[in-house]
Image (cartoon, helix red, strand yellow):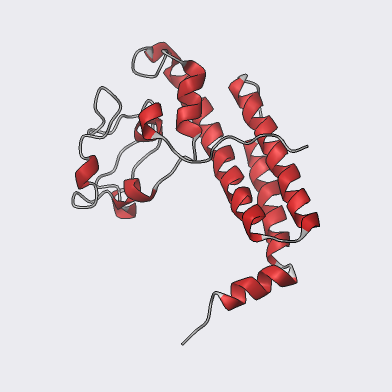
Length: 181
């Protein structure tokens, strides 16, 4: 039986602003200014909310509007509880490391979730769900602070998705959605 996967949607209200601290920003990619990794965004408030949330587009932060950690931020925040990067700077490196790995795994889980919803072939659905289960087990290992090979997970997941992309039903779906006028 497949594992119960976490909701793969971000919930900024349940997060300690991890994407606004851990990730680097690049002004040319729609983030208003360049920011180094592991540095809090200047607009991040003490309550971990965004000080310019209502003005993101107008202030040049389209990247923030479109970014999603797919639930990794709140998962890591919940894991560390009251001990966050701001209240416990000694734990910051550990929290950043867990978020970085969790964010990548959640991104892969989201891609697989989309694939499962798109594919009607039962064999492919089972293959995709097995990969989801494997990735969720890796997430649990990350929560336990165990080493996981995220790069290998990326390679395996993308290999599976590339194989899926050559399936006749997917090719037909893609062709139907890319009509040219």
